[in-house]
Image 1 (cartoon, helix red, strand yellow):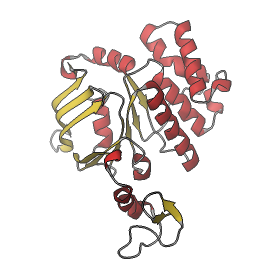
Image 2 (cartoon, helix red, strand yellow):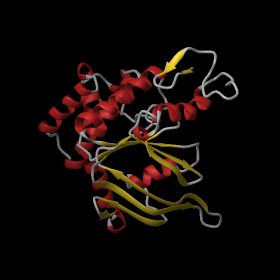
Image 3 (tube, helix red, strand yellow):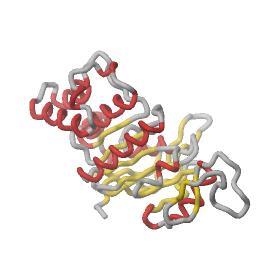
Image 4 (cartoon, helix red, strand yellow):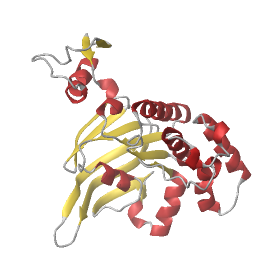
Length: 272
């Protein structure tokens, strides 16, 4: 297991003045180097708020955040902006590509922000990343001419261009169909394995989350569960995801659906 990369201690986030809403309630969390972690929970539970804290996009009302033991609270806004661009990659539900720019230019934007100039070494790196995400033949295409899944893969390459320590993704497949969703997650896992880069992904899809190394579940601004998927038996995983994902009524006393015959390996169960 890698060293601690980002650490949050007793994080509280409140919005409003006269009437305060507490989005995070004394959350303590560590993210380690090389971990592939999913952050799950119902809408409004604080997932995106916590992700924004971890990415230095927002400051906590109370509590402390550290990146490699560096305290975020002592950094100015300008220092935080530079830190984010150099050290953290971001993938959002909407790809936020500039349609008038080519695929290659969109990937290079973070490098232009950092240096203000075209860097041939970074351009070579961008082409390598586009090859990694399967889009080397599209580098000169306007980004607006790509499919939704292809555009999200461009945003993945853009998140990696400055070789960040960690990539933070907020519902990165929320706008994609099921096939594109699987392709994007397989790509993220491949990058995690090959580059050793840490990932923290917000998702509402427990089925996808269970493919992660670690799953953190939130409710009402608190972490209620934090475990590594390898520590759980296939039976335990099935009993948790079946009631959520099966569209048929479950038979009393069974963890699976009697309507289908797709076996869950190692459980003897069936699933939708």
